[in-house]
Image (tube, rainbow, N blue to C red):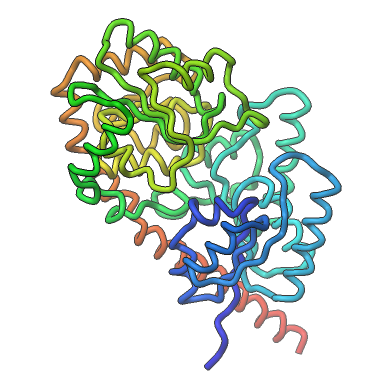
Length: 399
């Protein structure tokens, strides 16, 4: 029996392998010998155990660090030369740049990169120019580049970040789809919901708004907290649940925003949570007022749990949510517009119930995980077959 061809999946940090890709790695391991690469740590070992794949720890920083980046590049190059993978598939900006460059240098035949967000969209001046150059270099080293949303693909083409012939989208978008059996209202029973509400001091008459994600400026948290504070001056039975970690060193909030999150009695801050389903299960409205996204998993997760969403009008968000159908779309960085949309849903119970009834079926029909995995597997096989055909042609020509 022939050995399975090797597939290397690279992300900057192990959390991305764990959360962004998850069980997809185990699924692909039944067709390829999958090697997961990310920065070292206990979570990387956990990915290996849970997904039954081999992992290699190569430290990569999320910030610009020329010496560290060169060390990472050298280590990835040596790994690829040693393992001789058929495919290298990278995710996240830094892993994409270093991974694609190393794979190109090592002459890996199939080099794939997925774009799940563009930091350059919120940058200007010299920083933006550097980010544009790095995206173009990543794309130049890749054989194929995949945007995880159609609108993101349009943005990439508008900014000349990748040649049109290399660029595509897998399925209907998303990097991994959603496990709609796992993210389902029936997975969290009433006892668990009541217990969590009691822990968070949420009463049965409270309407619960929820945010899940990194608690940073880039996610629109300043605008979210500003709009919520205005709302509770008019509607006293509101609670805002914030699930996620601060990243003060990378993208700090305004001082008054963080103070409100930590001390306002109507705001329940829980930090990072391994399982966000209980928090979504007790929520009436999910909010993601982000400035930029690729294709946000958390909006799909909320929808699959039957929670209507209010999101900013950015790529990804405005593809998952159809305004007035399974949620509302508001301009990014506009606290007043966010407040107005939330107040509309708080007051209009019938609309909220109608949106909740539609939300889950829309996610299941478009973004179920199994469908996306099959589409990606088909892409892997198609690209490797193309390479084999080209190699055969070269061999015949030389002969």
